Image (cartoon, rainbow, N blue to C red; front, side):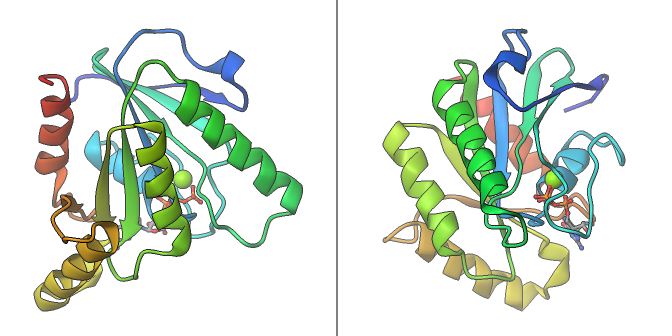
Length: 195
Ligand code: GTP
Ligand code: MG
């Protein structure tokens, strides 16, 4: 997809602040520091549209981006970050859950995991929760550039098994460093609209 416009709209800490444009929306969720913001930058071919950081907990609001006046992308705060006070964790959790349950324009959720790691309890819990509320979602295993070809295949198999009993659920592989997987993820979005 050719990106002619990639614009930061707003950061929201409550539903009142969500943008009103009725564009189909995709949300990016996953553990803190897993690479959500980097993945958005890679997808839209902009190095610095979204702030990224080696320190977990960088994204603290829901940040909305208008892409080509065709898509809205929502970058969510990460979950599972230990070093923030419980009150903050609670706020993030409420923010994320309210958003996922109430955002009418939300078409799909990209659940991002680190290809090097076994999905955590929290990742699996999030998947169950998405299924329960009936949201469309796709699992993306990122940071693929950090593994060898053989290791990648081994990890992909494990991740697929963790997310589905029969190992058949689609898991897309991604690297925000070299943009591998970009085409496949855009195709997934485009197919959503044909449903
Ligand atoms: P929070 O907003 O804190 O939850 O983090 P995040 O999930 O948005 O992660 P972010 O995109 O800020 O990336 C975290 C770190 O991982 C940064 O140092 C990135 O440069 C690095 N990173 C992210 N994706 C990749 C990737 O595909 N390959 C490599 N090599 N590094 C990556
Ligand atoms: Mg982030």
